[in-house]
Image (cartoon, rainbow, N blue to C red; front, side, top):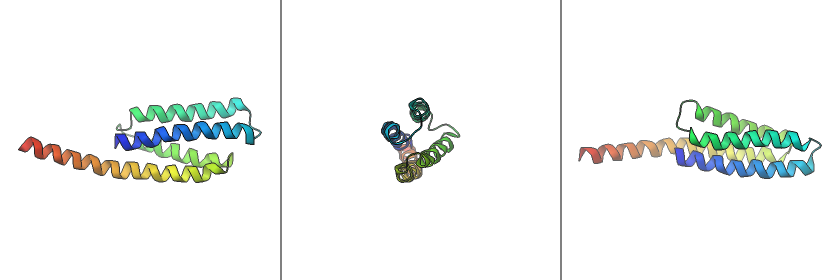
Length: 113
């Protein structure tokens, strides 16, 4: 799960970075506010990569996905990008857990043999 979720989060860092650049040109919001909010979101994505297997980290990831969708209020394109990344997040969590179970079963079989 760690690899899939981390990949999704790193992709989000780039989306937030580029969205901040676009938002500076297309909105009346000050660049200080845009970069402060974007910086916190990018930092949260990176930090979440390191703690993704801890309790509550997936829930924080879901909150981050909702925030990305809510960014559509400022930049309408973010509605679509937020939904895409929410779908990727679901896939990363869902299939990542399945992969973890398969790996654990393989390790158990190898230890028993």
